[in-house]
Length: 220
Image (cartoon, rainbow, N blue to C red; front, side):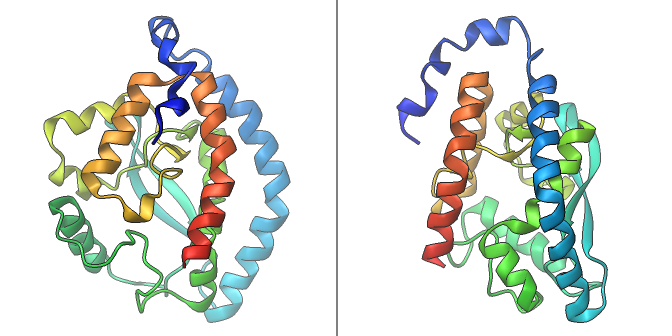
């Protein structure tokens, strides 16, 4: 992540001193607009997910929000119904330990992923229902990646500081070549966001999100 992404947010101390009063109205206005625009696409993709194997369109999962409060996060389902989570828990443990095999945390090669799911994952379209979480106030448009509760067992003490802000649909990690970054590098970016959070930084991250997704999809 270049330092240019953090300016004028480098003067973000005044925003932090005043609190995050701007975050909720910022998310509510922009998130509501984005949800209205994306809703037809979410419905069409949900139908495609269900038609492939007859399972539910949405996948719900517990995630850790601001100040450690858990919430139910929604995604379009990309795996076969009733998949066990042991595989992901092992992958998460290896990722945090720095012993993960391959260079993608959100792999397309997992045999549990459906054909429609691979397409959704390639372009991160499975994340679109999280706009409902943003409007509800569980998440922010921009922030640290929302943690799964069992991942907290692998946290270093300093990592818990990332829970001081709401998790985001996108963030510094997502626009920073995320597929090639380690867990420690992701955490460093999330902590950098916490230290420099401002409306200007949020707008810059959002502006870079789509180009970053397209670049990641091209890499396959």
